[in-house]
Amino acid sequence: MTRTPAAPPDAPAHEVWEELVTSALLGTERRTPPGCEPGPGAPAALLDAAAVETVRRRAGLLPARAARRPEPAPDDDRPPLPAAAARRLMTLLTDRPGAAGGGRRGTAPDLMELLPQWLASANARGFAAPPEALPALLDAARGRTDLRPAALAFAGPRALWLARLNPNWRFALRATPGSGAGLPGPEDTDRVRELWADGLFAERVALLASLRARDPAAARALLASTWATERAEDRLMFLDSLRTGLEPADEPFLEQALADRSRNVRATAAELLSALPGSALAARMAARALTCVALDRSQDPPQITVEAPHECDAAMERDGIAAKPPTGRGERSWWLGQLVEAAPLGAWPARLGGRTPEEIAALPVADDWQGDLHAAWCRAAVRQRDAAWARALLGPPTAPEAGGPGAVSLAERAKLLGTLGAGERAEWVAGFISTHGLSEAFQLLGMCGVPWAPGLGRAVVDALNIARDAGSYPWSFSGVMGLAERCLDPSEAGRLDGLLAVPDEPEDASPGAGGYWAEAFQRLVTTLRLRAAMAEELAMAEELGAPRRAPGGGTGGGEAG
Image (cartoon, rainbow, N blue to C red; front, side, top):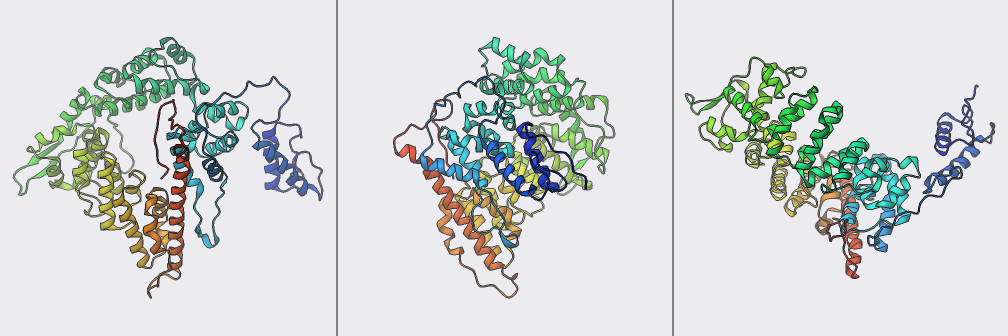
């Protein structure tokens, strides 16, 4: 059998590790590990080499040829973590969850799923990361992009210092513009111009976003200064930053972008202009959309009639209407949906007899146009952040699961919920669950704030209890159960104690379902109590009189629950 040559033992550390992994996958008979002799001793030599490389990879500084000593790591003047919280962090970072037998999760909490909450709370309280935890934090952020913003904020400047020494952590330098150097403010015009002219693309995006949050006009002027020379894909990313602080003063710049060479840039500019109800584009879209929709008063009750566009002319395309529909979609319905979506919602009451959004949503629509019209109104309500129309289109939570008077799917309803306040959102979802149960509630629950409001938490627990009593397996509700572990208020743990016993199973129940449910509720209770303990550990510094500091030197607050 021909053996594939391996990398020499003096190769760079990351190449040696890749060779060891390849040897383990192919087998030592086919691929001799680096630095090992072929033969019966190769498997043991491979394990020994892997152990050595594991230690080297876990070190903060990878072995390399002698070079100038690096500059000392910068100081982190944030207050240190309480000792108990530091131990908890290492437990969360080193947890390696494994499935129990038969695909069951067992009763142990999934600690890695609690790490985002822990990081958010630690950042809100302004704690510094323990130096010994930095390599594990960087490894966790490398493996999970959703963790990166919170993990790097908590890791602080020393993580960037380490990232310059280990190629596996270079993502931290890209994710933190300026490699730790603070972004200049609008008042520092020289540094702003220098970074905008010479910075990496990620640094320029971050600079524009930072300026936009503090001084929208300055950010817009900076973007306009080089707009004509930017690449199309860069123009699209830069334009997207204008969503923050979008204001009427952006209209002239966005109108110019409607003539851009890139179709995607034109479409984004049109979307942003349509989110400004007073813009000229919004008025043009309203004029087009209103000619397509009318109220037929000859019917009892009156009904909405629709005459969709028969063509997509050049002016419509310039205003962001895509002429070619997706596969399986008719041209006229495609054009109608885009027009209605971009028209200001405030134009419809006058067109439809002075009716309120609720009354408009309740009107019948002739010739099977209701789905297209209501779906477009849903998208308009989300784009324009119009809570009144969102309520009208959502309808009551007791409406049929397929949708309220306007929403065509639960996905649309979830987006509409995002326009409402946290309390109203939780109340609506609680009503939906009380009426329909949990089978369709996962998307809706994902829109609710954490920890869940008491009424929503009770509705979820009651629905889980009903599902258990029905004798079905809990696996059908594993997604909701996982959300409950992360989102239920920890104070609810006491209410769940009565659900931990294995219930008597009815004759038509799935075999063993009661035991599975008891196990799932035990894991839920254990996780809630663990979250409560996490919150107490992070609060220890305050109880001892230590300052509570948010990042940046101010005061902050947060809950681990």
